[in-house]
Length: 129
Image (cartoon, rainbow, N blue to C red; front, side):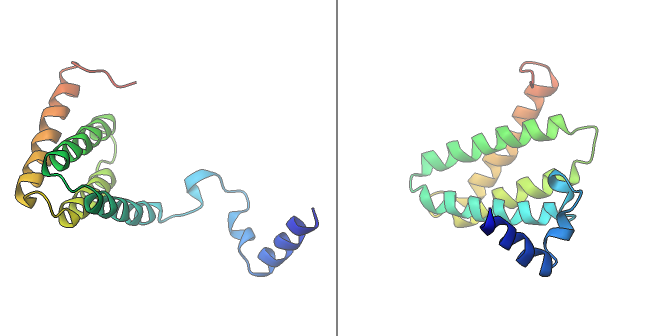
């Protein structure tokens, strides 16, 4: 209890906690897209460096395109620009960091996978939850 009170006093003197007062969730940061973009770039680069097999690289980017297509389908009536920005950040860092597969082929698998999976969702072959 003493430690938390001490931290609160120190943080309030640094003007950290007043910024969070009355805020919930992602409303705290007005720049959540940029933070999430950097996290996705780091994640994509890490996954790209970790996968050493070309076949697994193609499977991983296809799974990424499936997730991307589901997000884009779910947000088709709203602002899709932010989500396209985020998914392209992950995919571009993954393609740049991957050394085992052809970058042009990875990009083509990503775009083709997005198109195929978006069409599957659009034609109601698979329903989103």
